Image (tube, one colour):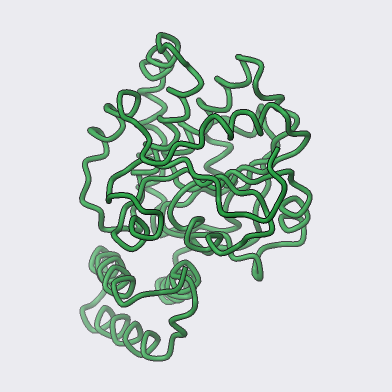
Length: 294
């Protein structure tokens, strides 16, 4: 997706919110904000928003001498969802279709996104997830693709959310839909907002049961011109892709030569309009692809 002026408004809000949190002199904060406007004046609006966020946060990390500006937030979100995991497991177990219940929770977990200004209540969205309908529902095709696949890649998104990803994968594995050896999970190559890194994947136990790789890049999306050779090789060889979250959707939306299932909550009007849903809707959507569908 191309960057629209509303994306710049969201970027400014997130950037200034992060700057304001820093314990630094006002003069330094002013300099950081001046840089933002100077940088934005020269951006290419045909570039997806995650590419722009990549540059913004790289600059902040360098200027603030801090590798992970959201480390505490990520730890808190991972701990919060892991502490609640027994009740979510019970809800999935008691559902008429446990695989769909777990899939809905994995999508609802995408609300834990510190890079957007959606204003939705995390707890409410997650607690209501199993009872809600998907606004776009390609879940049957997704589960069939997983069952038939010899190799696919799962693009993780945010801390906290990743605990629900594990619940979804564990559930469909227990039901005989997924062979764990057939999936590669990919995370960010370095900290960016509250996106998942290898450290987060290890912390929530994903690396014990699944093959997890870094994508080699720090954009809050999947920018294939920046990702590593290892990731690009896994992406190219995959029968299909599961893409979690809005940033991955924005950066992979136009890719038509690969079967991609997008799992996300639409958290802004631009993404919602692109998909044809309302803000806040839960989505499991197969992309418009030229690739063969299993």
